[in-house]
Image (cartoon, rainbow, N blue to C red; front, side, top):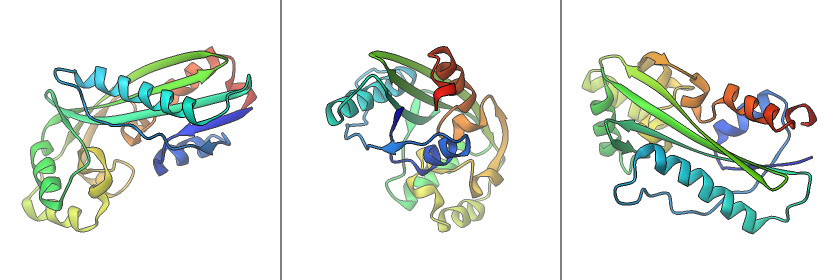
Length: 192
């Protein structure tokens, strides 16, 4: 079995490794920007599929090739909060999220034997109330700077999350229960 992870995310690597999946990494090059009028849910699904198509152009696919791609976004209302462009941007994002519910969507695609399965998983997250100094302290750790929504649930960001409804691993970047369900449905989980 030739399992390819189409992602540069260290969190996705850790999650797959934690369940014993051995993989090689091929990083897709795509433009991760939503189209005009594209809903967040539709955008994240398209981005995961675009990553899959980019990987399929880069690798030689055999009968034994499995490719997994994913994309995760943070959404407040209808607004997608990407990775912050600066510390000021991170501060603004965290200020908007503090004390409020927001949604984290991860879409993943599995390619196997010519089939492409895609799925979108949503999780509701609520932050506790944060003071300006708490937000600045968190930004000073540099953790928020390469994360969608400017926080990491698996890191120090766990201290600002008050409540999660749904998959915790989805917030980290890959909904593991749903991934295993799809791998079993494709009858490939036992082969990994």
